[in-house]
Image 1 (cartoon, one colour):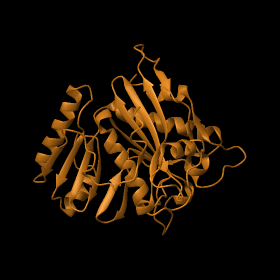
Image 2: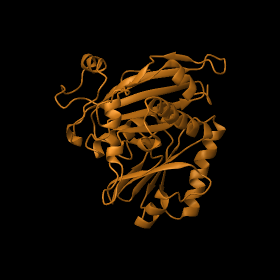
Image 3: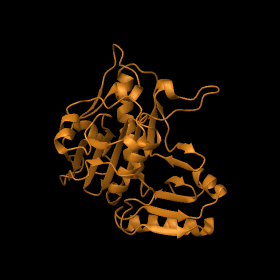
Length: 303
């Protein structure tokens, strides 16, 4: 995996780092939108789930945004985000993509269950929309919200601590922008974003997080390497304009040509308990160490 993208400091936008061949349309009708999105899905499936999975929409009304946010396209699995009147649809190309995200959450859940954490204290919110204002919102492929941030009477749900963003390999630069969206818009309340980039013979996992507020600018390769020796990301708020994000772990799972026996590079990956739950671990609790076998299980439907 190339290291040239290990740190990002520039502002993010819906139009930034979209893959070659992304589709842009001025919104007209949902019938036409359904056709455009279906064409993207067909092209992906015809090309073994490689290629463009994004549809950029201009001129969306408030009602259209609400409909898209509530699964307004029939027969299609997608994730949606918007800023103002501009929307971005990420078409999910296959059941394997959904299954990979799901298995990642199940793997994490198994570790938490083994620590004795009850199901009510393991809250996943698949494709829940998070909004900073009425004019901006985003869905993740999956996200984890600890009990202290869950909604209660009179108190809205808080930001997740951990987010998963999944896509095809051509979408990797855009997925990194998605990671930055979560950090920027939550002011650092989101602690970790796991990116899963899928292609036929390789699945890449990148765990992104924020550098500490007192880090040098720009982040140097040597400094990033020193940060990678620490497990815990910053547990403080950071305003968007002051943030520097970087890839803390990068694990590659590569086909060996034998089904169920991929090669794993750079495992394990550690998810700090305190970053996930926003509190120190108790006596039977601890950091989650994702092993080579865990990554084999996560990609089991693909490699």
